[in-house]
Every structure is written in C-alpha cells, then in structure tokens.
Length: 138
Image 1 (cartoon, one colour):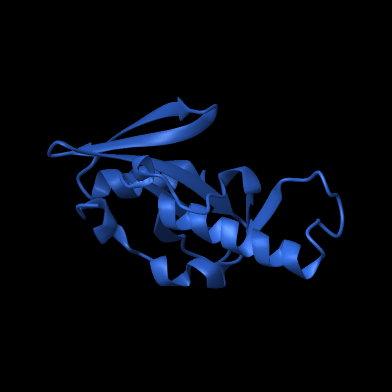
Image 2 (cartoon, rainbow, N blue to C red):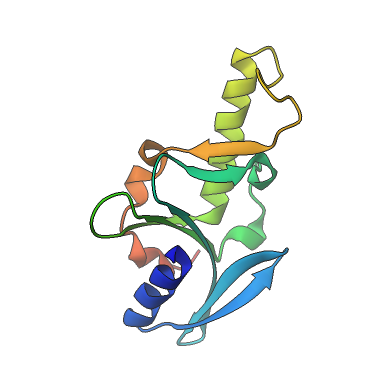
C-alpha cells in the first residue's frame, strides 16, 4: 500500500514510475526529463519504521547520491511522506546503531545476531515533504 501511495505521489508530480527489484528488494524507478531516481519505500502503520543494520554505511558511497528513500506514514488520517537521501539514511542508521552498541559494550543487549533496526519519526522529521530532492543535482 505504501509503495503504491509513493508511486502515485511521484506520478502526480510528473514522474514516470515503474516497479522493479534491486538487491531482491522492491524498488521504484522514477524518470522525468532525463533525470532518474531509484526510490526505496518503507511504510509504517504504527510504531517505527523497520529496516536492517545491513543498510548502514559509515560513509555512504557515491552511487547512493541519486537514490531516495521515501518513508510513508499511515499512522494518522492522511498519509504523510518523508523524502530522504539514501546516503544520509545509510549514515544515520550506522551512527544510531553504533551509539546503541556503545551503550551496551559493543554488542546488542538482546539477540546479538539480529540485524533489526527501528527508525523513529523524530530521526527523519526534517525530511517531511522534501519532494524538492527529486530535482536536486546531487
């Protein structure tokens, strides 16, 4: 549902969108006027958004510059969207996970082998409705 809402929002903004798979993950490919964006979509209906520490990167690689991560929030009445540069998100996941590990002696307190990572709204609040990032030269 969230991916469909994000795709519809992109189309309403003049982007041609198609579904694909990248690294075994559903992804939207958006194109407009020769500009291409790879868009990852995460949706929450309650609580936090869920991801993996496998998406963490201390220094996000250059290839993430044209990629975005759209977080779809279905908690309230109307959906809201957070449009986040994927490189920024990768570094944020790394930083928050490292802080967690530092607080617990370098290891997860529970489930040491887990790669689960929660993203709270406060971490991405600055990116709400940042659709302008679709057009930026990064």
